[in-house]
Image: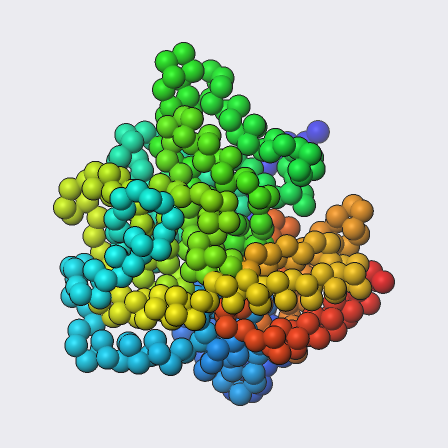
Length: 481
């Protein structure tokens, strides 16, 4: 066999997109003239590395929104099943949050990473609403990625151990530090020839039961995935455990209680509790990344609550301030106080403005019992999707908790062949018909449905009609009837 190795220089050509290709996408897009005009202007002034042309074949340009509806610059309305990627949980442009921001704007916007009255109030609230009857403290960052990096830094500092274990498919950020915990090949490639900076990171399979990596079936498998993970600590040929001395080299396991960017995948009931048992047995911290799954999204304030688990640290972000950037970590007091002043800082961490907005968001969520309403709307949405699954063979699986819903599309239900091209086609058709959602997944064949938690039954019914039409179009176009 002739020797042949593909060089990175050859790969890079495959990863670049020409201006001509992007212009073609704009021309073929379903948008109005103002959107197309602005897309061309955007392409002139911003790097093509921005996520717009990756998230969608051609992204819309939004101008305004209210509740679970959003309008583009041409005035076209969309049912929002994206919520700014799980940011606008209490609705787009919530009036009460806007008023709270306006009041704080008159006083003080930011003053370094220093304490403030709104910040102290927010910290107390977070301590009260996160699971765990132990003493807790809070530390702030700006983005979800920074929150993850802070939690990992703390875990290593507190334990003095190097390794961080993370499931395949988890999304923990795109910074050089967090990219090593996200592990998506397409993203990693852009760091070549130097890989992401994170070291001592190892992976294990997530309980993706529809496509079990161990070819097992739940619940008869009796959590085989947990047994496989624990086996890494019971032999002398992995770096995680000195079996003879009983010494663990693992600082923490960091996990999304429900996987988000992998396609909104729900683990089996009890999985997280079993994982915590492994952590306790081997002296490992459990960190829950609730940046996407928290803030009422799953029908409970935090996704880990479905398993009755109180992690040692919880990372929060995205939806907490109604659209303003803020993130952070709530964790055990002894962990959070294990470093000295200046161990962590950020010029815009926990700004007064974002904290004021977050306080109002949390007030609304408690007053209006948003998690319970989310459960009710989620049950209604999932019931409707299950009805569509009986009608459309392209739907292989529907799973959700609250308004954290994933749909898996297949070409054949028996073989589970991923309907990847079909999913991309359907995403575009949804946009054309006035519904915005995201497709992702291990094979690019899942829809992530993450609407604002204030979505109405009428909007869900309208979304169902669009899905019904789009699924039919895909089955006809790709000969799946």
